Image (cartoon, rainbow, N blue to C red; front, side, top):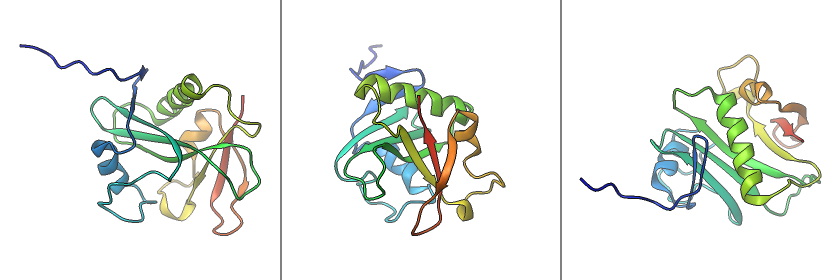
Length: 151
C-alpha cells in the first residue's frame, strides 16, 4: 500500500496548512468566537499562519496585520484543542512554529484575547498562562482578557 506524502512543514504536533483548510474550519465552527458557522473563511483577511494537528483535532492561527489597539504584536486569533495533548504544550509549540515561520515577533510579542464570559474556567486563559503568557489588561470595547507572550 502506498502512503500519500504531503510537503507540509511540521513543528512538533503542528502542521502548517493553507488558510482554507476544512479540518480547521470545522474546529473553528465549534469555537465560541465563531461569527458565521459554516463559512469557509475562518481567518482574518491578511497574513495568517494556520496550524493544525495531523488528526485535525486542534487549530491555531497567528495573524499579522494593521492593529487599531496601538500594539505592535502578532495575534493568536483562534486556538481550539480537542486533542489529548495538554493545551499549554500545544500553545508553546505553536509559538515556536510561528517564530520558525515568521522570525522574531514585533516589539509587543504575540497576544490573544479571551472572552471570560464564554469559557468555563474561573481563570480565563489558564492554558496560555501555563505556557508563559501573562495578562496585561482588557480590551477597551468588550472587556476581553488580553494576554501577551514576549521573549
